[in-house]
Image 1 (cartoon, rainbow, N blue to C red):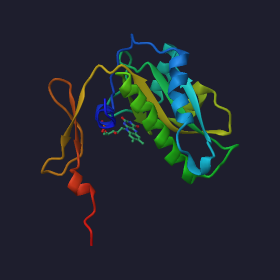
Image 2: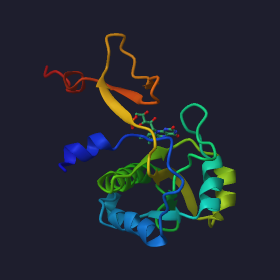
Image 3: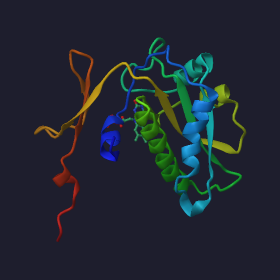
Length: 190
Ligand SMILES: Cc1cc2nc3c(=O)[nH]c(=O)nc-3n(C[C@H](O)[C@H](O)[C@H](O)COP(=O)(O)O)c2cc1C
C-alpha cells in the first residue's frame, strides 16, 4: 500500500466492532511510533495515556464528543490514546499542539496500515476525563485518539458546487466527506 492509499484509507470513523480487542502491547506499539516523530525543539514533551480494557474505554468514550449523537454503547472503539503535554518538560503551549497532531496522525496511519481505523477527538470534557485517567497535575490533555475496527465506511468526494464541506451520511450508513479541490488549496502565484 502506498502512503497515498493509507492517507485516503485513514478517515474519521465513529462506529466500531467492540468484539475486537487490543492488548497492552498493541497500544504500546502505536506509541512507539510517536517516539520517532519530530517534536518542536526535540523536547519530546508529549506523554501518552493508553486504555484498552472495555470498562475504561467506555468510561473515556463518555467524556468525548463525536459528530452528532456518537459515541454510544455497542459501537465504541477498542482503545484510546490520550495525548498529553508534560509541563515538567516544557510548558510552552504553542509547540505541543503541533506535536500532538503529528503523533495523532502517525497513530492513525498505523491503524490504517493494520486494516483498522480511528478518530482524533479535540472535543472532550476535561474534568471527567482527568477523573477517569487519574492524571498527575503536570499532564495536560491535548488530544484524544480513538482506535478500533470500524463498522461503518467513509468515502471521500470532491467538494460540490454548493461549497459545503459538511460530511453527510447516505441511506447505507456511509459517510461522505467532501474535500476541497487541489487547485483550490494551492495559492495562485502573484
Ligand atoms: C485536531 C482534530 C480534532 C478533531 N476533533 C473531533 C471531535 O472532537 N469529534 C469528532 O467527531 N471529530 C473530530 N475530528 C474529526 C473531523 O471532524 C474530521 O476530520 C472531518 O469530519 C473530516 O473527516 P475525515 O477525517 O474522514 O477526512 C477532529 C479532527 C481533527 C484533525
